[in-house]
Length: 405
Image (tube, rainbow, N blue to C red):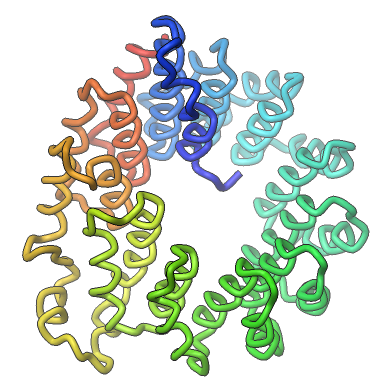
């Protein structure tokens, strides 16, 4: 449930099939309709402006499930109980995804019967439904976490187990410490990976020692999780390894080192990450993830910058929380990329802007909503939603009407 709809849409809609020359014009139009309308509804939902409630209701009756899902998300975020009746009707939908989305919205609205419905879904024979239902327990704070721990002990489906472990990590449920630590020995590397992150977030007793052992795990994914988790806990005993792997050939290994070193407030990693973001040779995924990692520095940059620093020039340039790339202010650099279709950063610029919450780029993002490239329009919509830009509400409503209704 935590994956952004934009990412899900990318997986569903951006496959090789849609760019095939055999696609008919009407099929392309349907694709654009779903892409733009769903992304715009989700963005409006994040902004949560009541002005958009009419397009949300229109989205509920769309023939396309992705649009319905986005509308449900948006209505839930308005937290207005007058929509309870419309949302309750969606609980009867045969599509489990729509049912979960409707239930999520009703929980956000504080609809009392939603709690009973959620508990029933925890016993569903469908593992996907159970895993999604587990994620919704977080809305009830600590109330159902002991129940979730008992479910974890008897659950046979690995995906459901992963959902429960993630729930404990997000809620920092300390009563699960002992059992999750045992799961570090699971045969499934995904379980071991999730457990590494969970014991760090919970700050379980003995977590550092357990995570150090996982740095030698057979699975690279587990080693990556252990490294990031040690950084999160502030353990510097393996910092030489983290720096070495910051230059590894594998992008995921590099990114995990960036993350660990940022957690450890190693300022010298800053020029390395900025180079990754600005380099023409960087793949989109690595560039976007690097931006998200670097953006974590901003809230405590003043304190962070007080440590040992070798690159004084870099420090001077970035002391005001305004990063510079190629001697340009970050906002200027990203605005340029956003307007240059030949720039290797063109498609990534909206995501980087949203990561850094660069408000100086909002006018350029709004202007790009009229671009003929619908993929780029969707990227900009996503960024505006992430930044909760109320200045784009009318334009986003206009896009819903133009493409969806």
